[in-house]
Length: 458
Image (cartoon, rainbow, N blue to C red; front, side, top):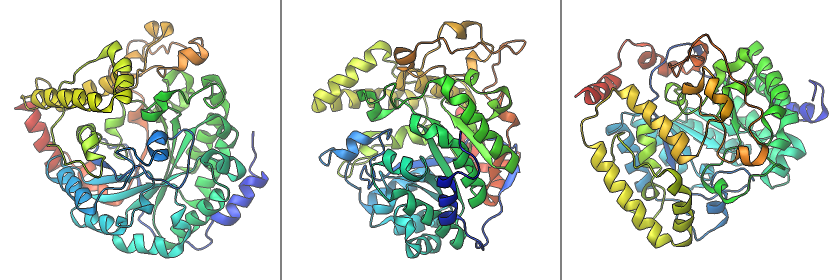
């Protein structure tokens, strides 16, 4: 376990801490909750680093992959207009690969800010080690940056596959402070990073990060191809002590902390309010709206050369169950066949989504949450979950976790009765809210949410 005076932390602080940061928006702590209105856009899977846990590593390394190249500015603008006009989104996560490499990124940030879609970039911030780039983003209207802090010092450089990357990232954090641009941290819970979690929390405190997200190393997208092993995925039991220390440090400093995609039972009771599985994500304004995410996540919206497909609202999905894995493999081996099957699936789901929903908007989101956990990522409840009172609001174990380590770490949570409210724990968490979000988040009814609810009730 590292201490506050560890050499790697002191070196990082020397590079990253700004003595006189510029003024920035004052975030407010709040328990207000509404379904998130944040959209997401993938510009193209081109990146300057090679993180071994990246969800899109195959697409980044394969320059011939249909999603590798960056899209045009006009296509990106069309997607953003749809997020506002069809889905009612008011903020956006702009991702790449690495979005700061895209030559038109400043134009897109300015465009988003101009149409009421507050822009965030999710970035490794290597480019932002150049102060002029940070100033240009600030002038364009960038709201904040979600910085991928995957470790410190040599550990970070090894994890991302490039020497000197840690130094550039720390310089970028200083530049963001000097420009007054707020930032948050994303940290994947990969095995080499565990001993540094407390130091990452201390870095967040000293540099003024608003939020720190700890993400489970998940079997999403390109990680389905067998890259996860006992060498890089930590056991749940290994996470406990370092994660608790980091969460305690952040809580003491008043910094919001979130733990994504882990079972509630492996997190200490005092920190369960910070756990977000798919059922909790709709109520985190910094997470992505399932409705618009379902559209932007389709291949046509992620490829440079494909025309956009029509947007659609949430509705029933085609449940493939045990056929999903073999069909995914078949699609990878025979892309033309895979593309045709995917188009059939899209047409069916669009037709179903066009029908008046039979349940409330919140119920639609919860149905979608269960589908994402089970169908898309294969999360599963193990034997011990059968007596757990949190079963209905917890996704359980990763799809391949039991194969790697077994299920003996599961511990039933006893609450005096089954929890059915997805916010049973998270409702007590204080979120860090940008002042521009307070009006719609704290109003009894904001116009967009009311309109979408009326559509659901029709």
